[in-house]
Length: 248
Length: 307
Ligand SMILES: Cc1cc2nc3c(=O)[nH]c(=O)nc-3n(C[C@H](O)[C@H](O)[C@H](O)COP(=O)(O)OP(=O)(O)OC[C@H]3O[C@@H](n4cnc5c(N)ncnc54)[C@H](O)[C@@H]3O)c2cc1C
Ligand SMILES: Cc1cc2nc3c(=O)[nH]c(=O)nc-3n(C[C@H](O)[C@H](O)[C@H](O)COP(=O)(O)O)c2cc1C
Ligand code: FES
Image (cartoon, rainbow over all chains, first blue to last red; front, side):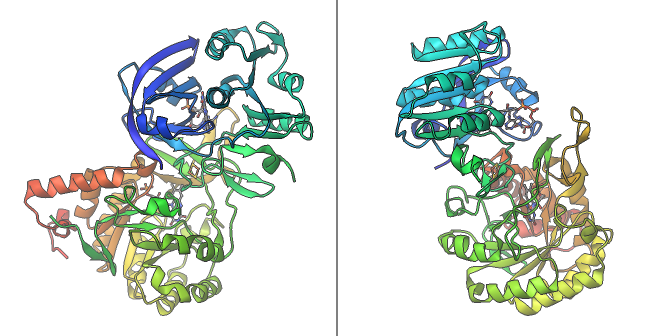
């Protein structure tokens, strides 16, 4: 069942310049959601901007869902100006969740890609590798480390936070033949991760981003070409077994 | 208060139809609560062979609307009949099959395949107006006699309700609508997306691989309203409005301009409950005005006759 409801923003925090955390009261979505699923958020009460923005569900707590987003353009900028108590129209939960893990879970996030992995960690535990660019990401990194208590390994490209390296370096370091890897980040990162780890771990799943209009499989706006034919990211994904997407 | 009316041969309980290409062909969405306020649903445009659609960016937000270049991604007629139609038997609203044909040959093959399923399809909407496939010339320079041949042949092969969806880009829309009427169709859908484009200023290139794309959403409403007004003044068959309807006021305006029913598409991206909200708004309006049936509104802005 997919709902369209008016959530209420109960908590808002700016984790670092341009990155926000929201906790939104949205009972029907919170009770049904699984890790990997997302919501389409209406960013304005008017028709401009017109399309809803896809955001991963970064966790649930009782009747609330957690969202984590960075300011990219007009929509997320408007969203960042909403306040506690404001109503937020949400469509969800959308898309497929990560399947039940069959190996030791290793969660690999690049930057904002950490959002769905936080929900995965809430449900299944496992080690989280978070890779960021530089020291400007300290706010998010600190917040993730505090929320996950321990099982986090941080990497930054310039070495200013955690180890020097990328999320991919972290994934190579922490993966074993018994690992199942769940990742989220830019498509290029996911493909590189797949090429680096294929055959060395039990499975590799990734959450993929595409532009969306309906979010429910109606408009074919989010279709992606794969070796196995066209796939709609909003209903066939956003979580894909990367084998299906990368292997010819 | 009554909303039920037979429009273009198709009995509708509400004058609001979900337009083609925006709604999943998954039966869960063809039942309450998703169909509250919905009179009928159009399928995605179905072609003879399966199509993967266009490459590159497919949807791009614009001021109060969007451009799309989907390119008719669909499972083809065989895929539709095998994988979708059986499941859609469980639906609670009429199904309007949106058909896209390359030419007369396609049409005949497709209608042969559809024949055994005649009773499972409540109406056909012949889409002569998708801007995102083939050459643009098919819309911009279509000859009225070609259109007549297509509609005439389909009319011979299909005895249930038949609507023809025309393009707002047509240089002779009224002639086309008159031709549709002459060939015996039951309704004419005015219109489809408007041809537009976008440029990615960072990449300094057009956003879409095909350069042009179709504009829809609230932004196009006044443009389409004019066409509905003009076409409904020229034909006697039912005119169904499609373009930018996003509120009950828009729906009422389009009906006052001469539409017998309206299709809504893009607004469902903004609000999944738009149909119900629009119907409720119309209901309040009719009550306030002391009008018993919405059909008394059709074309009323012209001060002329009711249907
Ligand atoms: C399934 C999914 C989950 C996501 N989860 C998160 C998350 O948890 N946190 C987060 O910060 N971001 C997430 N994103 C990316 C987020 O949707 C975009 O950053 C956001 O839509 C940008 O909107 P804007 O108006 O600020 O940017 P603009 O560039 O002004 O947006 C213009 C249009 O492009 C679309 N768009 C732009 N970038 C993207 C993108 N990367 N993916 C999809 N559509 C895009 C917008 O939705 C809008 O329709 C997710 C995307 C998807 C598909
Ligand atoms: C994403 C998208 C896909 C569409 N696909 C089709 C289609 O397959 N066949 C068709 O006849 N019209 C198609 N249309 C046009 C709509 O049915 C409708 O006529 C148009 O969008 C104008 O109405 P609106 O402003 O209410 O969306 C599509 C529109 C959109 C936005
Ligand atoms: S966003 Fe419409 S099909 Fe995926």
